[in-house]
Image (cartoon, rainbow, N blue to C red; front, side, top):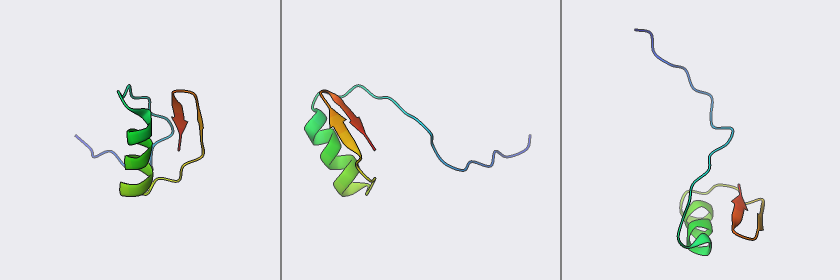
Length: 44
């Protein structure tokens, strides 16, 4: 079976208990560029 060549992610959705904590993790720890937050949705 041939390997899969990935180029990145386009979209992912996850349910979290604490949106502010999740934003801090993905922004500050993983270094994802934070775009904006609308209620309980965060966009990177």
